[in-house]
Length: 215
Image (tube, rainbow, N blue to C red; front, side, top):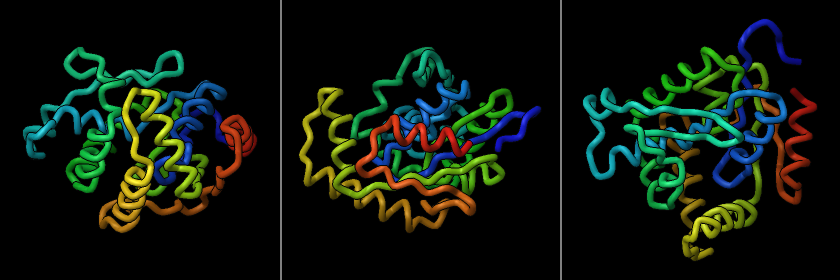
């Protein structure tokens, strides 16, 4: 059970396409928590960088406004809403590349801690329960088969008007899994004490209900 009288933290980790983003958003709404989409923060930084190298200046000059409003994460960079622009496969690949850099991970972790100061939060990512908030009140780890995860990602991209080559996308997700699991800094692993949930064959509503009754 969650502690009361202080700001609370719930983490949901897992590989790409496991359903963690959708589940985290819905669970946040169910509980009245503030949702942190860690991936969107990495994507926002990737968008900000474009083809510029990562260094102290680009880190120090990065200012992002993150708002959770009406069931949506809204990110503004220089006053411009980039929430949808950062969801392309190109930005996802760039975000995955820079996420392996310690200087970038430290930046995003700091941003997440700043958000959590004033809110009960649900955060999803790949190291939310192991590195960002190892002291979280409740931790979950979502998994799913590679086929199921590729299908979910394909549907997401197609809904945004992007053409999808399923075999190529599947290979890209497998490659990303390998990088996330084997990177030296904050690898994708199940946090100690995390509740593991395989989402294959489950409706999103069923996963949300399962998690809600374990909070």
